[in-house]
Length: 385
Image (cartoon, rainbow, N blue to C red):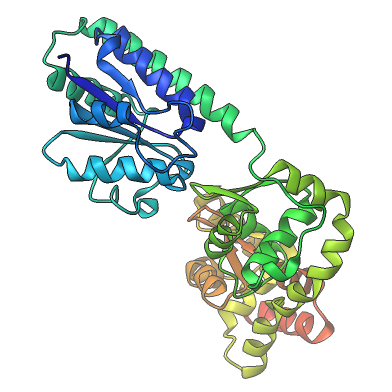
């Protein structure tokens, strides 16, 4: 009897299984040696059918295509239990984009190494493991490479279509009482304000900084919103289902109004930190000179670069100042970050002033303007004539 390559997967992921099957056949694996478990009814029954059970008994290698849908299927989890039990038979775990090591559960947990079909090294491993298990001579390297690239392209196309399809259905109204944390509320507010259904951790982080919002865990928000069925998260991006988005968008202003109090609760203008430091008397002349430079040159992005260094040097020359700030500007930039006056913009050599700090320094009240003028006078170069 021909050894069986058993592929366990949820029927909704059949297109992925078909692409894998075509790859194996294209590299010389007999089609009749491959058995896919997506038989009609397998997603709704709990007991493994006789045909599937017989195939698993005769398998020489087991492949599981893991997805969120796979882990939600009782039938698939039963197959997973058999695969785990038959630990003397080689097994391959192929993960779809939403599955990472931390998402693996039950029998097929993170004791297994995940393989991905958008990675040519992983595809090569799958081919080699199957060929060894079946004990047949497959096609030449050039053919295998061509088929691997074809599989990768086909897989990416399927995933792209899958990600653009509706994720979850939504009732006519969404009960905000189901959302129990401010993390979720504020991320949802961000999505509604931008009127988008896809957003990354970085996009939310930037928005949080621009709005000077404090004490928010974006990763936690993505996880909770995903677990509640509002959408899905993958590699730092959250996507609301299209029906959910249409609903929110149709009465967007109503939801923004309901969520606004939670946003206000977490708003913390960073200018308060600046004022507190200034009033404490701990603001030294270097930092005041730096503030004067920002005010005069209307600098909103702070850098530790040669270009920025020259800009400070030119400002000092224009104002007939000595090189005090030029010598100490690294310290000043670092203090602006440490004191919370500016935030990192995914660029280790650049910081952005928080809006309220920028507003004060660009349009300083009289007492600050007078102190900026005093400190500039203090460091003026005494000319010999």
